[in-house]
Image (cartoon, rainbow, N blue to C red; front, side):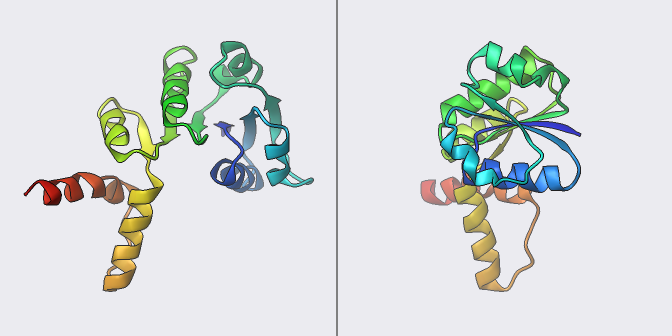
Length: 154
């Protein structure tokens, strides 16, 4: 599989290393050359230095050939905008965005963009661990925030 990951922070670098180690072709887009040090020296990722909001950077990363595009920067707006660009401009079928704001994540899921909110995911896993319940799939935890919001409104 050809995967383009934007952002080489903790999440993006771990994902890039896991997927490249599993034999997938991984391209990492990152603004900061220093952030790329998280990949170590023996990775097989293709590196593109630049801003993922720039179409030329996305072209250099060959997003048009990608099977999947994942945006993992710290910026929710950036991540959501770039996954839309990957899907609409470059035709990438599988796009995902790391989104810290659960309300925004929920809204974009309604538009068919797969979002991951680490706070909801971690809270759900910890709740299940504390209660001795089996862990669930990510779709279950993506619904965690709407459930909590409903509890707060009652």
